[in-house]
Length: 312
Image (cartoon, rainbow, N blue to C red; front, side):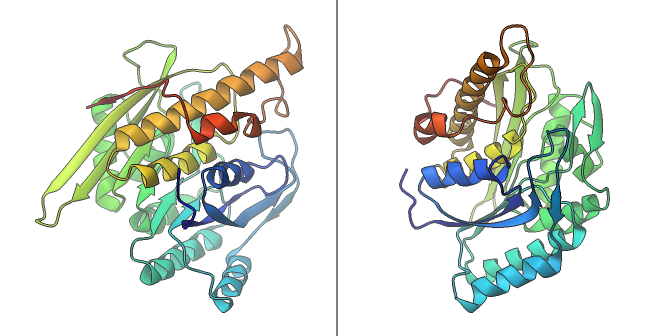
């Protein structure tokens, strides 16, 4: 994949060796992107562990870092990717920065993973402060070009519950109406046509042609479930989708097939390694379930397509 001249500003979480943001950085750098990272939190490790220590950055600290980039005139980017944050002022400042960067480069693509919460055993809950929701809904999503919520986050953003695939398509339409051209619901608890052992993701790409007509492509992806709880898969999905939509800007089907297939390779390698480390009959712990990114380099660069998307 040739994209050496693409510059990505990642505003996301976790900076030390066991952090989640390293997955996005490694992946994008492997695929040829130049990456600058700004931390939204600086934690000792990701929050999937029993304990963590560190700091949450605020808007003043983000502004100072961005001013340094501006003073050196190195603040021109092709993509902005944002993930986990816990501070509303920081998130609002991200919006200001994205708007300024888009004034400098009208072709800039902002990829937002609106990390707020998830569902466990059918019940959804937020794992960030609740006052982040209106900032995401009213300020962030309207300036985003690509968003990658899970089902629970899509429901939060629209105030609409998803019970069927039809509901999900209507929710994606609502999210399109808020601003983004591309919406991918990265995971859901919908019944997969292939059976209970599969997880459904749904995507929608809506483009307005010069004559004002709209073209919408919708896809469904069914991927095998992996019996483990991983941390960082959302970051990985968003970064992977950024890379493959760059390569295939008008083909969401191919971009999602490569994204999900690469993720399957990473997850299968990770769980296989984790089980060996844990020993027979033992459940792998958080450290053993750290995603095997380096070992998956070839699958990231050129993923064998093992998961196909269905055009809806």
